[in-house]
Image 1 (tube, rainbow over the protein chains, first blue to last red):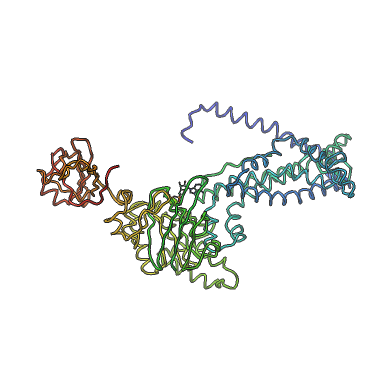
Image 2 (image 1 turned 135 degrees about the vertical axis):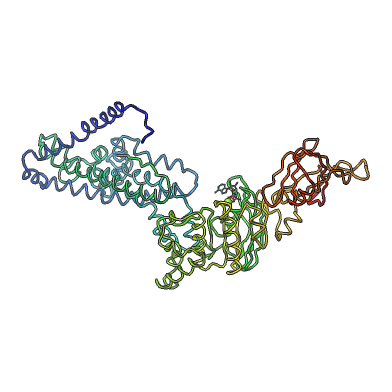
Length: 286
Length: 339
Ligand SMILES: Nc1ncnc2c1ncn2[C@@H]1O[C@H](COP(=O)(O)OP(=O)(O)OP(=O)(O)O)[C@@H](O)[C@H]1O
Ligand SMILES: [Mg+2]
């Protein structure tokens, strides 16, 4: 720290600017959310959260995350394992495809599913003939959520797995470990913080996704509204207190995510430093 | 358990890493795989361990075809070049790993595991580090723990990839003698990779010299040192000087010019020419540090020669830098005709 050459006033100015931006764009909105949610008292706050439509939205959001996150956990581990540890043709294509949902607008992501499964979509007639409802129903919400969140885990894990390399797994195999034992006893402990980090980001995105889900959900109150969609409807109906009460749940989710993320990052750094490895820069996609 | 490798080929893309490699290692032998960087040593070791598959060729362990066996079933102890210790496990758990992953029926009890690990730690003389993590060990200690871990499964074959590669000279020397004693004690068939010829010559029963994916020569240390099969082996096993034989006794018109290779200690230094093979040189550099004197000399044609002699010989000759002397080959290690 003693090698710093910038004059003190520049330092102070830069820190000041950063902190004011933080206050203006993050702390202020957060405060506004909680103030508006609670401005008619805690009783009204709790009542608007226990409204059947609100409860249905919470349930749907949790259910969606409960399915999408484990799915992406498995996919993320498999994909990053393949990318980090094997060489194969089309590897670059796979990497590009994994990143696709991040570079496509969520609305387009939603539209893809409408085009696939909608009444006029490619699979629409077949689905209707078999009485399967995808669009404007739970399956579409889950599929879309999986789609928009599937880079989260894989992208966290690829650099971690690359950094750890293959040797420990090979050593385990020469010592007689089978594939499962190698993964469970050697790979998983090495990647656990990166994995947890990815899962938390994935969960935050799965619960908070608006655009893509909005396109496929159909906004049926009490049935296909996730929490973000529920908030929008309430807000459009000028039911501000209820809207902000629901929003405060998502805000709390964000805060919890943030805190967990910091803890994990801290643990992870300590572990990597102890392992004598350079610290891998964690990318944040939220 | 003996190892036999027959006509192994291995290509990476278009690059031929191993080219018709055949090799036999007898039971209980300590064999050094010696060769420059990129000559395919690690690749051969990995193929024997089943970590890599050969394009073609056969591998036998004690006469049994090993190709159908997966790495985990080969019961081969492998020590990696960079140790590959499990970084999230203590030294104790590292060594116990091979025992803990055994199928239930064969798995020793917790007490037996404890005994075995401590026995191995004693063997590698590191009993006090059991509860440390690999990051808290020195390079030499990690190396020995990696060896102890490999030995826990009681392998019949031990493969060591540059076991002393990343250690400093002092530790290397100690460990290589330790390896020799250790092998004499346990008698496990051992194949170890090195690119340090001194290490190979000092430790091994047998040396396999590799170059560009091919085996150049197999033989005892004396054999490969004194009777090199090729210029490459000669060069690789120590410094060598080249003499271009210009005048031979009969000056027949059809005779081809020849190259003679002479080791630095096989040159006689004299004040006057001893034969028609003697070359007149000027001493350009003298290094007196060490048990032998190392001298660089330059001929009028600009060729550089390296000479080695004992301190006594050096003093008897009363040599100093810039002296003009004659070099005469005493013993020609290898000669070939120029093409
Ligand atoms: N997985 C791989 N893909 C492509 N090329 C490889 C691979 N593994 C090894 N090679 C190539 O094969 C050749 C032999 O490699 P190998 O690791 O066996 O050499 P080595 O003799 O062990 O060298 P060193 O002493 O540097 O460890 C090298 O040229 C290397 O680039
Ligand atoms: Mg190597």
